[in-house]
Image (cartoon, rainbow, N blue to C red; front, side):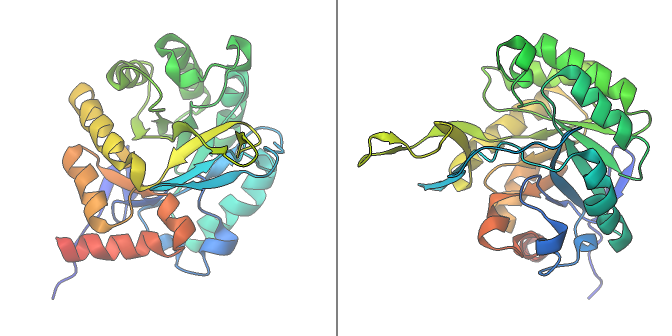
Length: 287
């Protein structure tokens, strides 16, 4: 039987197939023990900032019905360590790589993006769910005007690198944010990021997470992801990488039917490190 050609073009970059490793759940050192990173359409690496971020105190993860809460705090060793280690190893393996960028100010986002523009990374993903320290801690992605300013700066700093903007679902109207992102220069969009959630220990009467709340991911948010991808596809025509509670090939295909061009796998890989390649095989079988 002839192998199915699942390759596609995302913002001028060829993906071997539509399955992407989502940011935050992939690490070359651990994940490559289970599958070849070049087997996937793209690897989205963990969030990287200009300088090292320590992240939040433990506990950083809490199990919940249909998923998990996390409050990792975007811990990373900074852009130079990322380029020298994670990016170099992935590119040497032949993988297509998308770097997830974070910052506390627009200047920080622009600085990281400008540095990445000098490397052989394939795409840059802007995580605009970060708290904007100059706006009282409100996430960049909840205000169309603030998001537009950030994206425009990053697009200019990124040179010819495709800019994918990762949208937060913690908004009233995802369509307005999506349109603002594209009008400001986004080459593509990825969604959804985690939903705000909280757990309280009934014995201690205190929040389970040290930060109080965290980001909800897993199967529980899949219907929200399908709805928001669908609404976003009605609003814009740029490539969309859908994500949110993808546990099986059918989940991934459902997001494609909603309008996603590619699909990212995140929480499933924490349960089963080989989940991305399993889901790819399930899509091939389903087709």
